[in-house]
Image (cartoon, rainbow, N blue to C red; front, side, top):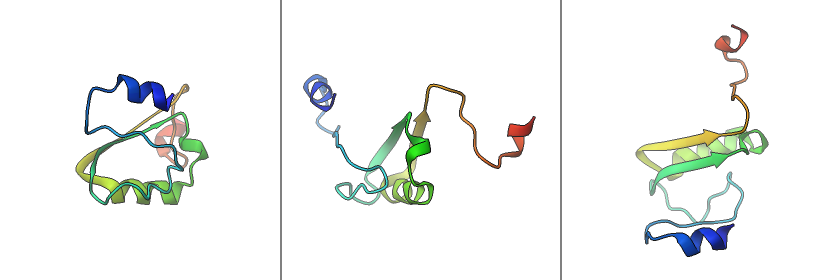
Length: 81
């Protein structure tokens, strides 16, 4: 999948990595506009992933998380409604 994405990418400022999401050691601080997490959030170490996203995202950067079912946040009061 990574090789297919690289071969179709027309942008010089897009990079692809295979790594643990909680350790983005190859990404500089405050250097990313968008972090995407697809169908894996429940497998990640929550404390570590949020810290790492905070470290790499530029001010105003975005985290996009999606999956195949309706997401929920554990402990969210709206979940019980």
